[in-house]
Length: 420
Image (cartoon, rainbow, N blue to C red; front, side, top):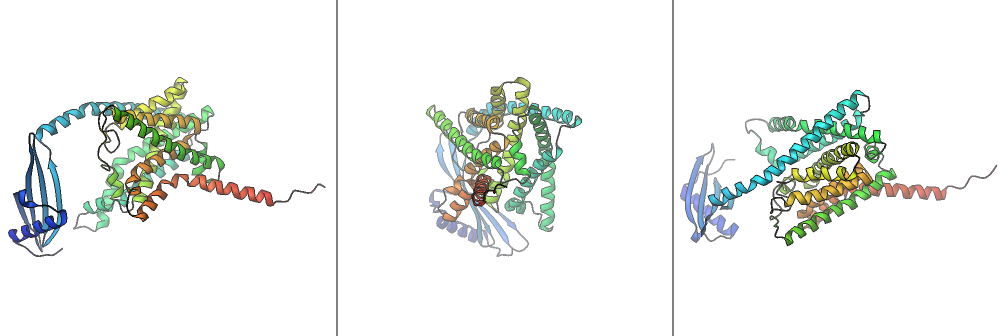
């Protein structure tokens, strides 16, 4: 946008006024350290930097940056500059966590390879129902694309201003699809292999999931799986909470929240749709992988239920070792332990109640975790929207209960047949 071309001193004055009024800062103990200017086609921009010392042992500095575009202050940020020794120590401390995470992904690769082998073998024997695998993989892919399209801030950043915006958006989506399509293919194999193993054992742990995908939302089995899923999701939340509290008694710490991935949803065009789409994708991908395939495969190979529960849970916990938007922050192994315990609950739930219950359970837990900043908002509209979002996995249970009530009412109104 066009604007004035202010001189440095005038722009600095405007920046100081905005910082004092907007951030309530006293710039008396700040020292100006840098200024840069750039001439745009129709205005001049200036960026100013101030610093002040917070501590001398270790040397810690707070930095303040403000940007003046034309005659408007468009950016202001405060940041603590972490001392070099502290950064190096933090980097060194990452090594054990990275090692643990790498072990988890190596074991996850073993599951993926096994899934492809089972998938190809059962496909050759005509035991794979491709429509099921394709339907779920397609849902996951659609959820991903929908989530990307809701990240309007990211799409704007990717916009090459000399192009029409739709071209930049298309390029961004094509590049993302190219990097994520492998996940859809892996999921296709995981579901196909898991379903074939499940049916060959006669367990039918996927029956209610396939009923829901077929549109049978009034099926009592679907409604029961939905109810159980929501309840198990609450149990998982309790397990995580008590595990974090127990570790806290031993000196564990939790990072300031919300942070990291929380803002992926909060900064989208629609936090409601973003959390629904993205975490449905996560719930399907992780539960059909870790539990529906890996749990079923391990149960077939070993005949031991505890192995089918615990081993996938351990791999699940290890692969989440460094996701710092989840508790615990310290010790470095705390997060893996907490998520392993939660994974054990999901493993038990899968063997006891089936695939749909555990998918909806995971979805419920994630929706609550990543909507709690909105649940704590001061705006009642935001709180209501967040609460309704968390309740979405219970919709099949509600619909099935209403359908059952209607059926009972019709049964009472139908007169008995007279004997001939």
